[in-house]
Image (cartoon, rainbow, N blue to C red):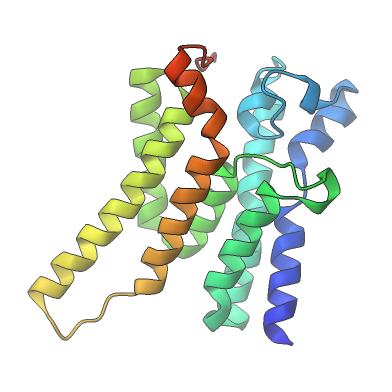
Length: 203
């Protein structure tokens, strides 16, 4: 019963389409008819409203952070389930016929609940890559890969130093699933990058 509650509440939290709601309230537009049609912060930025884009980013991250941190305090054994379900809720929200966002901000929120150091690594990598290439999609995919690879490398180093210390393989599996899902949600961006039609970040 407990796991069902965690699954339901985490999914419902993740499925709140803040980008869609904010744009509708403040501009009376449907974000799905703007730019890429995505409900996330990057597409909200394409409306020209930086404040709504920042607010969307914060809210999407918060809806990923809160369920996971609460689950960690109450039912720590279910933290991986909560992390995955809140992420899936954003990508496949029931309210929008399972057509949601790309999950990067929500992923960051989940990451903050799991590890502050990995969150900082993600943000730093995202900023550096975005400054170099100017593509939000490239930054997101590369940053999620970096987080995964650093975690795997760190655990291997720990094992080499002390074979009695067992790393948390569940976190590595979770980060791998997140990476695959982020690649999946960016499949159109990958196609655009190949065709050189991907839009650059405009700030």
